Image 1 (tube, helix red, strand yellow):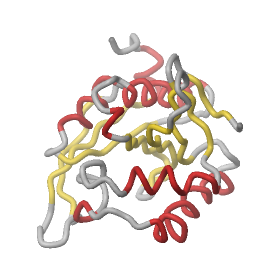
Image 2: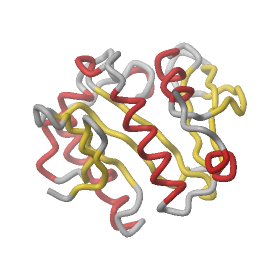
Image 3: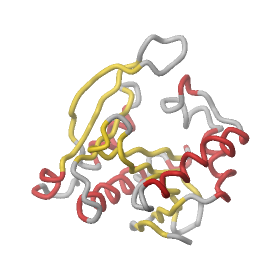
Image 4: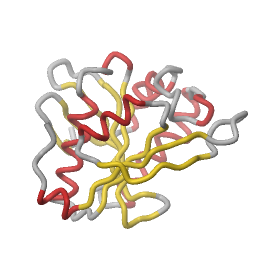
Length: 188
């Protein structure tokens, strides 16, 4: 197993072609993708195989394996819990985007915060990241809490034209700069 990072309870590893079923189960739950996919649309196994997994795998080649998407595995059970994203931000490659998507069975257990904190720390201490950003819809307060608990701070509020049938949705951006991370105490 190609391990990227371990925390107390999680193993974050690279995705492989064998993860189609894991991703399908994750993205076929309407509650899991409610705030993430346009219109909260679930994905078919074919979409995962043809579009989603190849896009995820391409990040390892584009960044020499340093950045991308990482499968979150519960160490005690070996269960796939979801994924974390830590990669150059599309709109501004000087920033590194943090994201996460976990199965409902993993919600409320601190896994998202644990994985996010570990990636932020690795980014600043080992990967030379200068600015981490994370974005969530205002109507998704659980994701906003994860960003806060991971040590990110509010940066701005904006709108995003994401959902069919709705002109735009409100989103919040949280971030943390390297110099602030290095002089701050770890979040509680």
